[in-house]
View: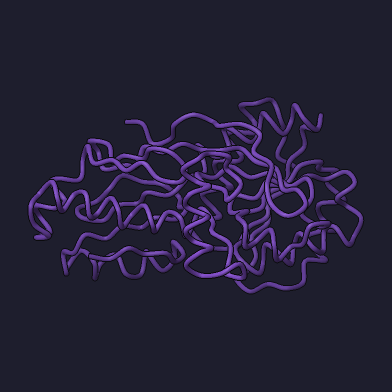
Length: 283
């Protein structure tokens, strides 16, 4: 079996091979959504569920209604943009601009000029990795953070750390896991992680914690099936559940992942959990 963490563009490339091989393929990070197909399962957070939580909350908190979308130019960020248009309009906001740039973009001057000219007060950032960090650092350096707040569709601990405390302050995120979740299960999990890998180990994030869950769900399905033979194991997945650092997650009858989502704000040293946003992935 395969537990995969890579971009949706890579998933599009490997999907035909995975289908021919027939192994269970668990794609666990944030993704654009879609129904499970064969033995391929997409279990991460999807844009519609994230944005339905973030958009109205940010408009209430910051008083703005004008939005701008910036993302990398491939399938997942464009799906985020499409969901943003629908959600912003449904909540009474206005989408004032939308821009997609190649992966590994480092200079965002033109985009920042466009954001400033649009008078947008809120940004949906679906850039990934270093691109997301570079954009937010440059937005802060340009003085735009004074009036512009960003929602990061993949603002996890590693990205926040690369942006920096000052530049990231006030950014919002909706993900299934944050290291700062104040639950006994998460405190135990982080304690065991630090004991095993030391205080300087990379931060745990929604992306990496999803792999941990994927391994446990695989193991529970194998125990239920009594075998790791792919067809039998996949047949045992619906109804399989695991209670871990962020609470209970479970595979639904259609093969989606039922999971809690959390709304959080970036603060010095980490995230402040604002609210648990209920369950996502309910059939």
